[in-house]
Amino acid sequence: GQYDFSKYDKFVADCEKRGIKPNFVLGLGNNLYGEHLTAYPDTTRQAFENYARAAVNHFKGKGIIWELVQQPNQAFFWHPGPNAKDYASLANTLLPQLSQLDPSG
Image (tube, rainbow, N blue to C red; front, side, top):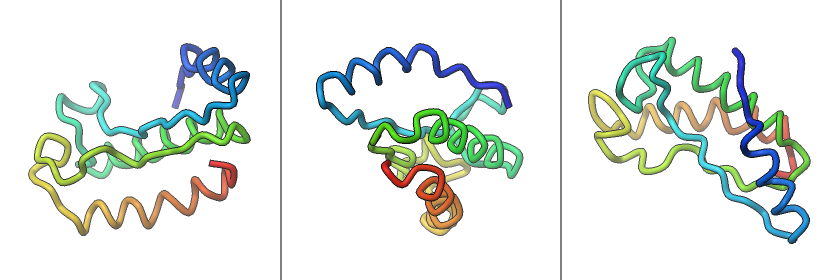
């Protein structure tokens, strides 16, 4: 539940000065939850959702373009294997929350 976005704050401020909208990927993976980039088990998925909400909330109002996970069809990212239903479930649950936190994103 503790996040340090400080190394991105200057980057976002510099982009703002130049009229650039950064594209940030909300990617899976945290070595506290295992070695794979995955949304399994549910504790890992919940941790990812918490991180995503914290990131969007931290940068709200900056007009950042948010991407939810790169290449969800790759086995490297989804264990035990790619699963469109699980990705859609994550997107359908999380994206409305993120849009509500930051309509500018």
